[in-house]
Length: 451
Image 1 (spheres, one colour):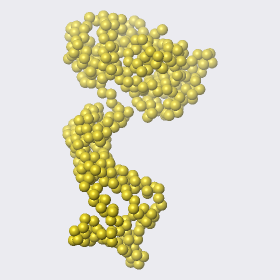
Image 2: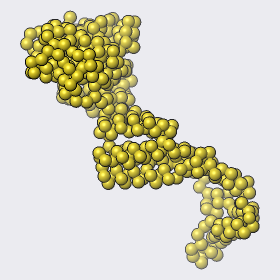
Image 3: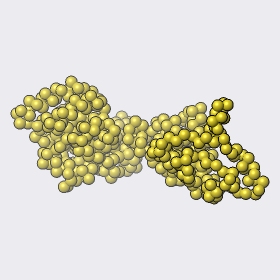
Image 4: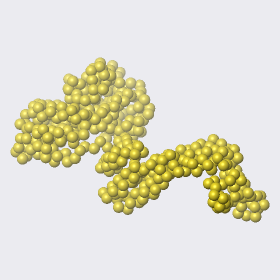
């Protein structure tokens, strides 16, 4: 049987013809479904569950236009259970309670209920908590669809009671197959319209769709309308460009892509690849990312990953922050690009973060010994009588004597301990081996050997 529509259109007559092309072309069976072979290919777990009418509670996670809603509809068409669809955008706790009440009555009569929640990541904690007990006791089987990482957006208790299936962006070949079907299907698509699609227009449509079937079909439908309004019969590349304007961006600065792309950006700089760094920077700027967020991460990286191998890196990163704050976008991309290139091509050292980590570990693991007397500040006569500061050697005098005697390090008697007694001899700072920091290696070794 046909799956019930999640959008309220009828499946026949005028309502069907007026539905968007993407809705009309929605597959009704797994054999029509395109993509996600790792989930619904022959013998795969989700396909077996749907075909055996044994669908567990599950979360379908993937980018827009990859088949999440379609799979829910196919599961509804294949199951003998009562199927209810809610959108997290408009549904509230009262709607959930009505569904649960119906499900409890049906359960008493021996019939299961499948509850589909589209965009489940938009449900707040209270709404997710409201459905949790009924998923747990089997009153409803939950199918949730989300474009956001469920680890961030779905309560852990609810997540633990559902299987997560990850959907991937469609390949160009898969999008092309969907477009071709729409062009040839006379009943649901454009096959009876007399229109043709130029090869370069087809390629442009697939490229701009960026793995999103809904974008591809929406762009095709709008391009067809443009052609028909001009009384033409061939969809050209310019028609597709006018319909879609630009590539569909799979990026949400509040979602997982936000973290994935900034991670790729930082790792590209750390790995000294300026080309990749510029690409990921452009991706973020093009998608509307907060430029100051990007710059903050570059300031952190300048200290963490470049560090003392090139101390100017931090200065440039801070200057970049000031420049971007001052000029804003779009011109702000210039100092951002300059900073990204500089950081990517700079020598690298993580000695600062590693050294600080070793020191902090000792602070947290050892007792808080008092400051040695010779290092204390003798600010009052009482402090001086208590021998605060006694025996302190003024470092500059030691360095001057060292220079006069042509020594590279102060003699042992001119050196003094600066750490508490129980930490004498501890080594936290280890210079890196790149850039300006490399010259400190021999100096630090000689100095420490003389203590």
